[in-house]
Length: 324
Ligand SMILES: NCc1[nH]cc(CCC(=O)O)c1CC(=O)O
Image (cartoon, rainbow, N blue to C red; front, side):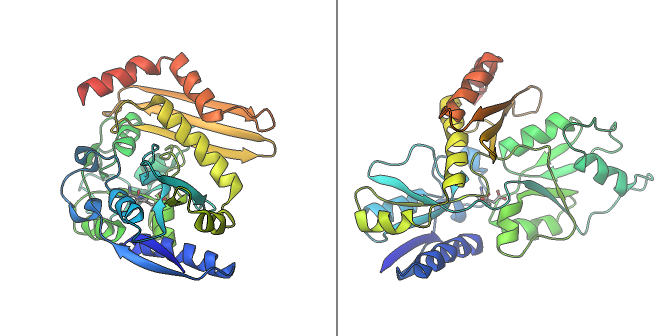
C-alpha cells in the first residue's frame, strides 16, 4: 500500500487522486493522506514575501522523511529546483495546459465613458507577434505572482496589479467580490477541478512558470519498490521538457522572487525553448527562443540560460536580487 501525501486543497486532492488511480490501474494499491501546508494557512502574505522556496512543499517533505507517507504529489511549478537531501523525483505525469488565463470578473462595472469591453478583450488576447492597440482604459488585474505581474505590466504599462492569495476556489470568490477587471490563473488548475469559467481569455503571449501544468511525484531516495512503481507512470516527454525549464531556472536563479519564465515543447525531433526575464515592474524584458535537436543530447535549459545571459540577463538578475 503506497501512502500518497497531498495538501488538502481541492486541486491538490484531485492531483493526488489522479496518481492513486494511475498506480492502482497498474496493480499498486494506494491511499491518500491529507496534510496542511503553510502556503495554504497564511492567505494574507504575498508568496514572494514568505520566502517562496517550498512554502507548499515543506510539510510534505517532512512527512516523507518521517516515514508518514511514501510519496508526495505536487504541482511541479511549486517545487523548488533543489530537492531536500533524501528526497528524489519519482515521476512526472503528462502535462495538462501550461497556459495562464485571465478570468474576467462577472461583476465588473464598466466605467461610464463609452469604453468597449470587446476592445479590452481583444487587446488582452492579441498574440505576441502582433502589436497591441493603444490602451483605451487602465484596467486593474489581480495576481500575486511576480512573473505574471511583470509580464502584464511589460505589455500594459498603464494598468494596475492587485495582490490576490488563496487556493483557486478562494481566488475565484475574491475576484467576484472585487472591482477588478480580472485575475490571472493557471488554466490547468481550473480545468482539473472543473472550475474554468466560460468568461476567460487565454494569455498566449504570457510565458508560463517553469513546469506549469505538470504534476510531480517525490519519494524517499533509495525506496526501491516505491520508485519502481512510480517510474511506470512517468511521462517521458513531459519529464524531458520540464527538466529543461527547471535547469534554465536553476542556472539563472539568484533569488526566489525573480520573474523567470520558461516553456519547452517537443516537435518531431526538436525541443523548442522559450525563456524570458522581465523586471518586476515590467520595465525591461529579455527573451530567448531557441531550438535544439533532441538527438544531439544538448542540455537545453542550460544552453538557453547561456543564451539569455549572452543577451544581457546577468546585470538584470543581479539588480533584481539586490533590490529584493
Ligand atoms: N502557485 C499556485 C499554483 N500551483 C499550481 C497551480 C495550478 C496548476 C499548475 O500550474 O500546474 C497553481 C494555481 C495558479 O497558479 O493559478
